[in-house]
Length: 152
Image (cartoon, rainbow, N blue to C red):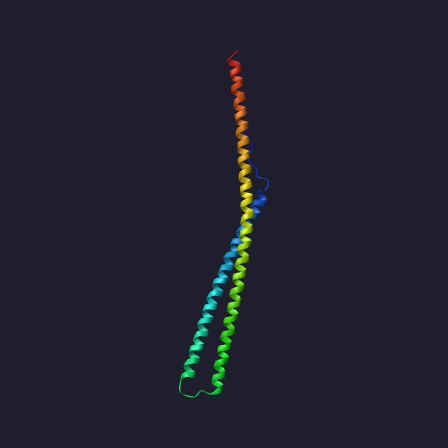
C-alpha cells in the first residue's frame, strides 16, 4: 500500500508565475501610489492657481493705480502657475495610464498563476484517486486471498 508521492511537473513554472503575480501586484501598488501623489500635486497646483487669480483680481479691483511692470509680473506668475497646473494634469493622466497598464499586467499574471494552480489541484486529485484505487485493489486482493484460504 505504498503510494507514490505527488509531484507536479510544472511546479517551477507555477512558482515563477506566482512570483510574477506578486511582482505585478507590487508594481500596481507603486503605480497607484504615484497616481495618488500626482492627484495631490494637481490639487495643490489648482489651489495655487486659484490663489494667484484671487490675488490678481483683488489688486486689479483696488482703486489705486498699479504699475505696468507689476501687472506684467503678476500675469507672468499666473501663467507659470497655469503651466505648472497643466504639467501636473498631464502627469496625472500618465499615471492613470500606467495604473491601467499595471492592472492589466496583474490580471494576466493572476490568470496564468490561477490556471497553473487549478491544473496542479486537478492533477493532485487525479493522483489521489489513482492512489486510492490502487490501495482498494490491494485490499481486495488481500481479502480475496484470505477468503480463498479460509474457505479451503
